Image (tube, rainbow, N blue to C red):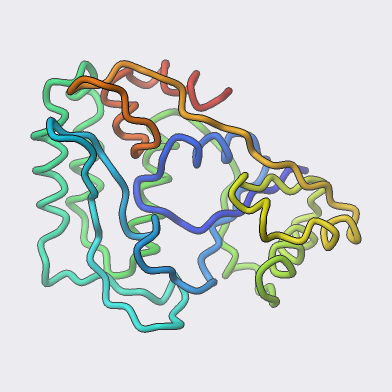
Length: 225
């Protein structure tokens, strides 16, 4: 049983979905501390002038967990995101196929950041036809901090393998997994080059850039490697 765990991100990059594909169970780590200015409330798209952030505005207090952070709906962020995506991708080859799904996603009202993040991931999985078991860590009632929390989640799900992002290599304690007979495998994914609008290739954008430019079938191939 391969388990992958990751904080819920907004319209994540292709590697996020590679991790989901490679796992048997994927866990949204929603009951850990929210981190400002990372990927939990924003992601990048490509424009004629380069990469651009799409940011979900939030009300945030230090120490809040991700699933406690509320969206600042006094700002019409969702309409702005719809307009920005439309302007920058309307000439993409698969714009007409995919844009209605994004427009519908962003036309809904969300009150918590976790809700739009989970909804955005689920939408893309559904659009690509990827069917995986996905749960939230908060539903498991697991205690602990950092590595110990990850180990407890894996134990709760009877994992034999924990699939970790390569970025965690410097701070997770592999020995804690070994003590519980859980093998740690580090994901090794690099966004492959694909045709984009606006000139020179920019890697690691939101997966929506890939879908708009190369479509469903080719995206599945590129995130499955």
